[in-house]
Amino acid sequence: MTSEKAIKADAVIIGAGPVGLFAIFQLGLLDIKCHVVDILDKPGGQCTELYPEKPIYDIPGFPEISGQELSDNLMQQAAPFSPVFHFGNMLESVDRRADGRFLLQTDRGVFFDTRVIVIAAGGGSFQPKRPPYRGIEGYEGHSVFYAVRQMEKFRDKKILIAGGGDSALDWALNLQPIAKKISLLHRREEFRANMDSVGKMRALVETGKLDFHIGQLKSLNGDGKYLSSVTALGRDGADIEIDCDTLLPFFGLTMKLGPIAGWGLNLNQNLVYVDTEKFQTSEAGIFAIGDINSYPGKLKLILSGFHEAALMAQAAFRLLHPDERLVFQYTTSSSKLQKKLGVL
Amino acid sequence: MPKITFIEPGGKSRTVTGQSGQTVMEVALKNDIPGIPGECGGACSCATCHVYVGKGWTDKVGQADEAEEDMLDFAFGVRDNSRLSCQIRVTDELDGLTVQIPEQQF
Ligand SMILES: Cc1cc2nc3c(=O)[nH]c(=O)nc-3n(C[C@H](O)[C@H](O)[C@H](O)COP(=O)(O)OP(=O)(O)OC[C@H]3O[C@@H](n4cnc5c(N)ncnc54)[C@H](O)[C@@H]3O)c2cc1C
Ligand code: FES
Image (cartoon, rainbow over all chains, first blue to last red; front, side, top):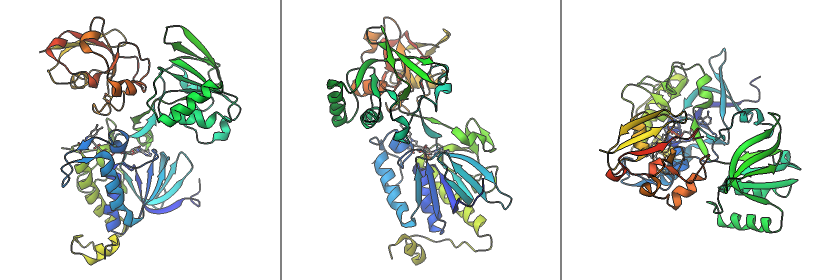
């Protein structure tokens, strides 16, 4: 790949969890602009994906704050530095170029040309749960999909959607008009989804435009690549054969280390080793902060990640500007910092 | 202290001692029982702590509440005796409990 269409950046942060978000702020104070990549479609990482409503009690200065509020506040705090977010993108590859800069690529074909990489990938990237059926890998990308990126690809298909959450219902409703046939498979009558979508879905069932089956996936039938049908186990224990050539399973997300494992970094049990002065990995210019890193005494707490972000930013500045002096300043009293924050 | 037996999909079983007040997921994690990652730390928001409650224990363990039932939609191979182990609190009454770990959580 040539780097011509790559976005030129000072720093690319991988992961928009709480620690990645605070890194935007810390780097921003030092005039380092950031691009931020996350596979999810929203910021907040574990805080918003796993426990948005739960209170956190150990964020300094906040006796109690919910995962969602913390994420919202961090976004607000980072806003003066105009970070550029690339949601829905999984960072896949990292290549060091001869000039010491890095060329990064996401699964959706976004390229970055950067000097500094900040891995704030937490527990790994959130990826769709894949049903545990032997041989499902062979069907993936041909007739099994975990996301809909281009609706047109599904035109005139015989689609089976499995699951009972919002994603399952949204896609059942969205794809119904263009599909040749659409079926929904869910393990029970009740849905944990938006009431409005449930109503619309039931209306389609009544008019015969959508087949609803109560049951669970049992086996995939086909040639190993293309599906001809899916067998489900009905609630009464009897098999249901569902005619389909496309399966979309929606069973939520799970955290997987993902591509980071292949970047040649010093890893141990899925964690990236760093030093505790710069929070740099075994590769100069690649830093790792938050839940993803490991060092003696590491605590997997948001508060530790914030501290790591501050020290990492100092080291990143020195790397980008080896000849400039870094003056230590307080946000309370430095007019320079306040100008950057837009409060002066 | 209540003893809990975890049966792996292959049939291998291990009996460990839990403490009243812990959840079954926490007991599994503490004892390095494989197949129960408990990714969300017990917040009932990941369904990676799914277990099948052993014969004769379903009444004592009780039924899933609504939030847990909703979360079970995100587990695979759900049966009548399915529970999320982070929602089962260990008590003295559960001494001898057996739970089976599903083939795969995700
Ligand atoms: C139920 C629960 C309760 C918790 N309570 C507390 C608490 O009270 N106090 C506390 O301090 N901590 C708590 N934690 C831990 C805290 O949530 C984590 O320490 C924190 O989220 C770590 O932040 P992070 O930014 O490092 O990573 P994460 O929040 O994990 O975010 C990482 C992000 O990186 C993305 N990502 C990873 N790899 C890639 C890739 N290759 N490409 C694109 N995107 C990628 C992921 O999709 C994710 O969004 C709790 C955790 C859980 C699960
Ligand atoms: S540990 Fe996540 S639902 Fe039980």
